[in-house]
Image 1 (spheres, rainbow, N blue to C red):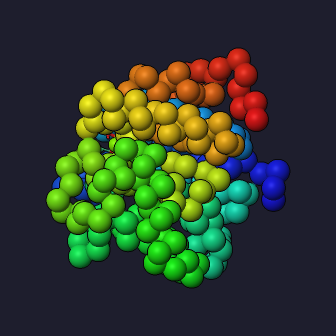
Image 2 (cartoon, rainbow, N blue to C red; image 1 turned 90 degrees about the vertical axis):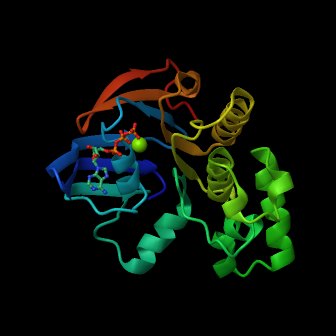
Length: 234
Ligand SMILES: Nc1ncnc2c1ncn2[C@@H]1O[C@H](COP(=O)(O)OP(=O)(O)OP(=O)(O)O)[C@@H](O)[C@H]1O
Ligand SMILES: [Mg+2]
């Protein structure tokens, strides 16, 4: 299983049922993300990027096709296997819900609770990952007092807290000023350099500089638009 790609989809499809009728948000997507890749998915608003990412991290179930994480088929996996797989994939999504009554550090480290890490160690870990996204000062703040851009960086900190081998981020630099966006870009670069497989959806062309492979998604279809010469070299 260790030779399997970090993420893989075969004939993946998602049809949303909505007020305006059925929407084919993801259409027949077959994608392989090798270990150590940095994949950037761009494309017009409404093209299906967020939907694709939500299928990859098992937030949503596909209408057709398969998703494999580390070679394990998410649809066929038992609940125990699904949660094991989920723990291997950190994800940072726009508007990720926060538990309002808990301070930022507790929200950031929720994933560590089941592993039995004590409160003091969790707060220290939260400080570390919040520091990486420039938000150490907010460690004890309540999430409802944070700005949109701050919440977005909190979501990234939360994704990093378990040091997952795979990181999936939806528009990690949107809503951010130039300095904060550069900090997030730096974090993604560091993660990739330490061997993390990264997949981001973005409108931010600055992220293309980090990519080992790029794709465009439009009307649910994913199209390869390039691979850097060193590809997924690690
Ligand atoms: N929960 C949902 N129910 C019904 N339709 C949805 C749902 N989520 C997304 N859609 C529709 O699916 C299509 C793809 O949306 P998606 O959010 O995946 O696009 P996107 O590429 O992420 O866009 P953006 O760049 O604006 O974030 C759109 O037509 C959208 O309206
Ligand atoms: Mg989106």
